[in-house]
Image (cartoon, rainbow, N blue to C red):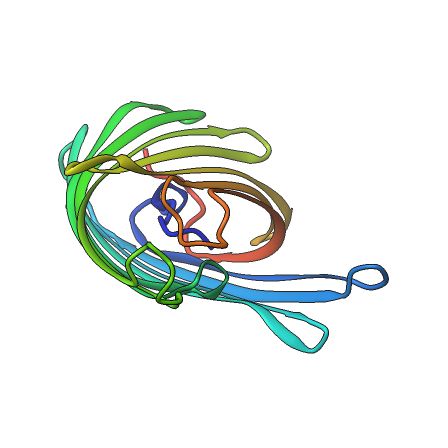
Length: 239
């Protein structure tokens, strides 16, 4: 799971669409662990607006004890009637125990800009401001505050290539205007390949950077995963 939802993965054509995905992984031998999770999203699209609801969760166990526990719910409204400049607003609640994050809530709004789009390629950027509230489970000796309430600028660029597989590359850059040294960067590469009918196999590589994490949390984090997703609704992408 990532703190920022890659919303460009869920842009669809008119109607009700979505997908349900499951992820399982593990190892036995020198390293014994098991991970499992699920995600579901649904979008309602008209000629005027788009509404997205997304839920995601992940659990991991090592030696019979939980070492990973993360969850996220995201809601987004986009006014899609303008062909190029599309205002949108969003709400999100999430948590991530591996990063000592027990609660996070954010609300924001901004502008999505379509730079180029055809049947095979699309290039978009997004710029927004969001209010962010975080609660961290950290000791009193940690110089990082255990509760924060800040305003951030969130900006992304997304490239999508549609061939036999759909390749989506997205980069986020988030900064506090009051403290430019406080930066968060997120990168996401996803390759979705059809298996049979509505079933897809999805491989994802994610990178996260936090310039000011709590003690004991690395500034950089990379995860690689694969999952299977069942897609329902129209499979024609938004044009």
